[in-house]
Image (cartoon, rainbow, N blue to C red; front, side):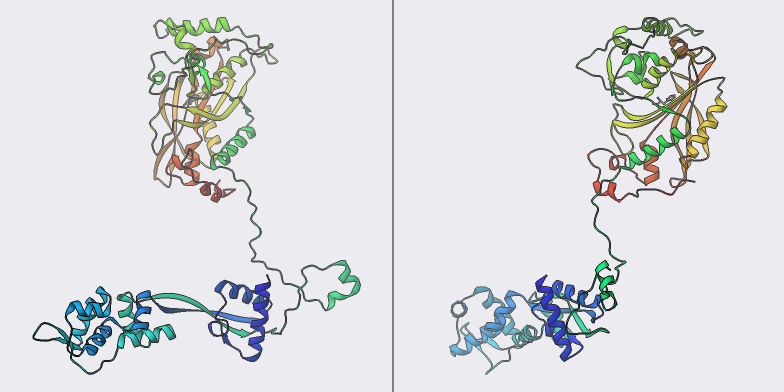
Length: 510
Ligand code: PHE
């Protein structure tokens, strides 16, 4: 920084002769930035103090420069006519001046000033001996001093677009407490050498700058969805849940719908609601995917068919011809309940100490797809938080209590439950919470107890009951981060600086 080094010496030398000084007089060539850097350097060592002074300055536009050089339009018209003595026709006047618009504007003004008049034969002539070119004088003053004593003149010339105003910043600089002609080098570290030699006693130490912002770490930032996801995961782990493997987006109709007792005519299976895969179209029938999977898939498949067609396990079924083709169509999973179902089917094969499937708690948080019209609160893909609890002797009251505890951990309290319908749960409940910001109840989840048609078909014992619930990850994230349009959160419209600005940690939990 040689330049600022030179400037600091210059400032110190100038100050040693007079103090205070004005920067625009003492250093007219230096830019604002250079001066400020040099002054800050000196001020941080208390060698100078300075004040920033803002002033309005006026500078001439190109047309005004012309006037200063050649006279105002009206003065030029007058001068041409005065020289002609006999007067001039308008055309000749134009020729004499050599500029049409100057002639036109100047003529008008000169008439107004009564400097010129018309002769009986239609010529123009000067009607006074001499004039005073006030405009030119005013502009000359502004050119020299960058201002004019009369504010009225400044306003008028600005209106006529002859001058423009600009803010300039000057510095008023004074000697500081520790003024000296040279900057002494300040030590930034106390070294072993200084201690040994005793140099520390006389060394000048650079003061700590507690206001320094620190270097930009340029670090990565977590997306709000990721932050809320990790909060949910933490809660699930805390409550003894195991994470389900959800790393596949494509499912067969069997796992996504049929195994869940969703009839093949159900509107959710429409093209308008579900994305179907066109290539390949068809899945393999459910089968073991690992050597230690000893489940009897054939029986399961037949049980599902029976439950749909004629009923089984105490159910009368839907009574329609169940189509294998339909069951094997490939879909983008519409919910992660497809995974819960496969996990429960696996659970049916497990044996606890008493030889029966042991209680289990599963969860997942992953992406699902719905063929929906995209708007401020709907996307065609979103993330689902899903939980399942399997145990003996569970009751609906237990599910409600569990929901209270679970959502409380997210800072969501005062739940309301509303009866609902899912083909795979009975009873089913929608979960609502009062949203203080919106001043209304908002739906936060869907839940229920899985139907015997679904569980017994897998071979799970009759008295094993299963709670299930699901919610979108986006809904609570939008509430927690005050986002009103889902497209600001997910998709191509997401503003990266919004992601960066969000707090790393929220302290709004109970
Ligand atoms: N699958 C339901 C949904 O997508 C959520 C749910 C899961 C409901 C399990 C009940 C039981 O909304």
